[in-house]
Image (cartoon, rainbow, N blue to C red):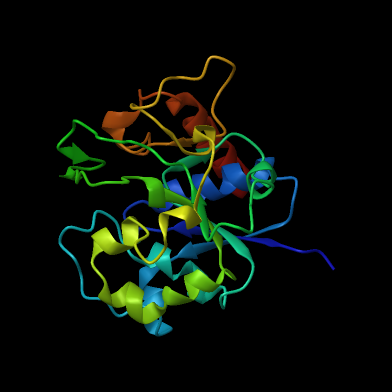
Length: 231
């Protein structure tokens, strides 16, 4: 029986095309079987996993739902979460190979302090410690310390607690190479080829005024390939 690796992708009703390209670019380059699941907030509410009131400071519909991954995995196995504004340019199997059981979560530990006051389609840019650490996370869902991240905690605790992984001791947060969460407009362009995954944090090529950002041509090509395959 084929073993599928579970991947959860943040989904926002305003950016479905970003999710579709993220998913497509990941699947096209993957050498392992993947089960890619969009974290659709309305469905999570219907299923009883999410009942948090709307937060005016939340920039996406998955600002908090990303932290439901261990619950959705029944606190078992490894799973990957990423935002929808990613373009995958390398085999995600290589990322799963970095999973280390001594950690509860693993992420790229950016020191990201964006100068912009807005992002994407004009939404407010919020600066906080460990910004973008939670935009791509390898969850060791079976780690005993992740049992503290219940649905009740996700629906109750403030964003600062969740996005800074405050349910964990810092020693349980493993570091991943920057190439797996390369921040467009912030990180230096790699000299030896493209990064493994481009993260369009400022807004991606699905917005008309962001079609000339770095790696936009690759995102647009991926979108066109996807549309052609659907015809």
